[in-house]
Length: 118
Figure 1 (spheres, helix red, strand yellow):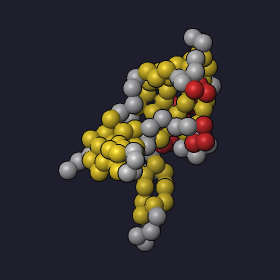
Figure 2 (cartoon, one colour; figure 1 turned 30 degrees about the vertical axis):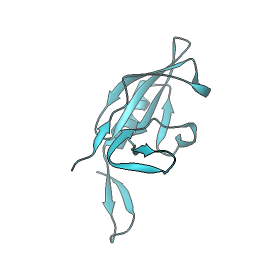
Figure 3 (spheres, one colour; figure 1 turned 90 degrees about the vertical axis):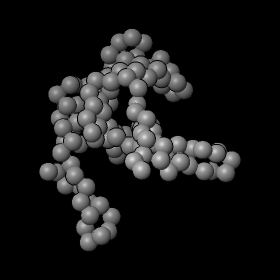
């Protein structure tokens, strides 16, 4: 059975440390997203990140997670520089987006995957 994956929304209103920010989907493909970030209604920057999913929680107390239902996640501050990046210029954001799309996961000797540019 294929997992059901809930996608990120087109617009996300910031809460907590990003209250007052608005994240608007700019571009998407199978492996990545670009969101435009607005602060107090003014364009600030682009956020480019790899698509990541986590399993939906069925029972918080028992820490039970769904094997079939997942949802995409938006990166947290700690993820930037690892699988998410910020850019001021659209050309730089699009370049990173395209690089993410051209990276493929390759298993080496059955071990952890390595990543190479196709």
